[in-house]
Structures are given as C-alpha cells and as structure tokens.
Length: 132
Image (tube, rainbow, N blue to C red; front, side, top):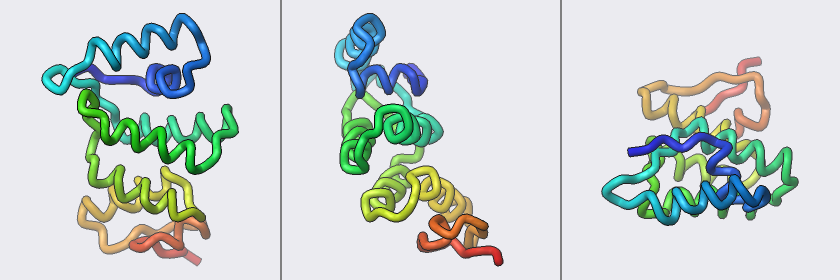
C-alpha cells in the first residue's frame, strides 16, 4: 500500500499543473491496483475538501463528487470508509463542514455518547451537542 498525501490527490482531482497532474494520474490510474492500492487517510479527505472549497471555489456538489470518486475507486483504500461515507452524506445534506462530520462520526465510532462543541453548525449533526 502507498500513502497518498493531499497534494497528490488534489493534483489528480483538479488536473491543473501539467507536471504534477501527469505524475499523480500515472500513479493513481496506472501504478495503483486493488492488490497494491493507494491509502487515503481521513485527514487527507478533510484537507481535500478544504482546498477544493477555499482555493478552487468548487461547489459543494463538485467537492462531494471528488470525495465519492476516492471512496469508490478500486485502487484506493480510504481510512475508516464507513466514517467517510457518513461524513459525506452529512456534507451533501448541507449546513455543515465535511471535517465536522468526520469529527462527529469518529467520536461516535470511538464509543463517545456525544460530541460537545461551540460550533453551532457542527452541533446540528446527530451525535453532537452545543456546549453553551
């Protein structure tokens, strides 16, 4: 397995730098296989969403599709995919950040009864509660 950093994933998704895009595409489409996959940590997904929204002004639907591509690629293994899918569904429903969904779902998977937060948007997620 080969770990993929955010910059490699961004170049693959955005295709905006000829040299880096070529290298990332060759690796992901030609060098990785289901038997020798690329590994994408949850933090890379969080950073990817932030970069696409902040640096590329990508719409929520476009960002969600990029995450979906990674989650469904046979040559990619995403860390804790069930958590990533739940976070993606919350993100697609709107009103919250992808990272907030990851935080809530990771806490839930760790056995937490709830996640407390000062973030009003994150507190709207099931399993989260606003700490007043």
